[in-house]
Amino acid sequence: MTNERKTTSKDTRGGAAPPDASARDAEVARRRSGVPDDPVRSGDVAHFIGKVKTLKRAGTGERGRLIFAMDATMSRQPTWDMALALQADMFEAVKQVGGLDVQLVYFRGHLECRASKWVSDPAALARLMTTVECHGGYTQIRKVLAHARKEGEARRVHAVVYVGDCMEEDIDELCARAGELALLGMPAFVFQEGRDARAERAFREIARLTKGAYCRFDAGAAAQLRELLSAVAVYAAGGRKALEGASGRGARLLLEQMKR
Image (cartoon, rainbow, N blue to C red; front, side, top):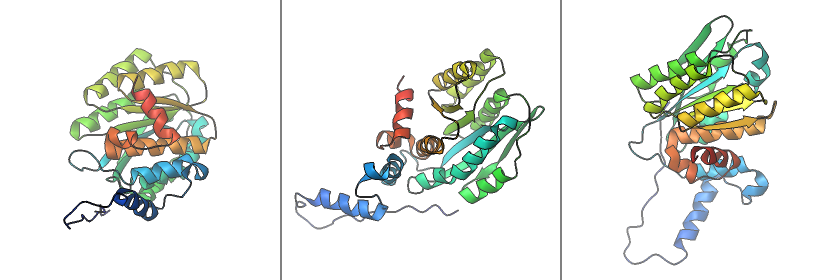
């Protein structure tokens, strides 16, 4: 996919700009970005996406790389379907920030943990996700973290997203794997569906060790998950400055966690 960036023209005329030039430019930028007149009334996510369209990635301008990992055991089918419907929003949120490459990782069944190729558009990720059926089995979060480390050692990965509802592994081993991601500067953003206390303890610790974030969302809450995934995508594509310069509930939740 061609990675295009919009540029703004500079005023090369001499003399100081009129006092209201910045306000006028801001209004023009708002109209071009499609941000509604009343962002609060139109929803936090629309305002958030409109804000990050004006941001640029700090540093080299490289495309963001995000590992999108999900529990695909049998009980996760409804959430898998919901994530499939929402995944395009991640790409849309970062379209003007610097682009995003995503790798899908999932586990299911008996010791099955798979990773897709890296993709750069929602249609490609949707095709990958529609080929996956959820099968019964135990969690394999350790393998997800180990795979993320391997990918990060080969080439920088800016963030890992994990979506799940339970944890059936040794928490100390998971923490050791999370520590390896921390050494690579790879934050993990862990989103828990439901209220399993053991899972929450492990997920919070993984997020803390990697300097990422933990958030819980309710079953079937598509709006909550959309906000969180979009916020992480912006972080992966634009860095922490993108989150700090953005508004929206998802961005605020992640920043609150990352400051701890």
